[in-house]
Length: 201
Image (tube, rainbow, N blue to C red):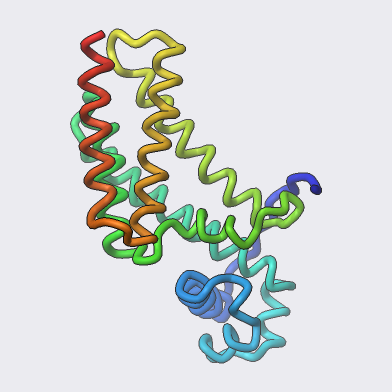
């Protein structure tokens, strides 16, 4: 099964940034296994040698792609949370609002981490740490926000955090599958209803 490996990142040169932008588009649109280094190089206007000089391997390009999306998502969400009212309820719902906006602009095929995990399930793969780390971060975020809800004990807050995470992640998957329209808005409504129940106990 393998074990998790320590995440290694590279210093980005202009050529590496062009390659990463091309790889990000291709990986997200077509899938990681379907995209080869030759295609990335051609799309980025660099040589395959340049790619290997900068990244070392396709695995490292995948790591940089997923880590870059995660960093951009966290920054996007931080802005939304900073702008939200300070009440815990408002901040929880702001996560769903941020995801809905992010998916509208960056997520036509759903969550890049979920999609990547469908192709990379081996913990020994260097990108696996990025994927699972991002989801653990989201669970920790929802749990912290739930612990700020007045009247909830630690166990109830942890349970609420897990339930909010399930609503959120399920909505991202449903968005990518396009089973029904606007699943993130639906998940937000369900989260709001859940908060109503939890705060009236």
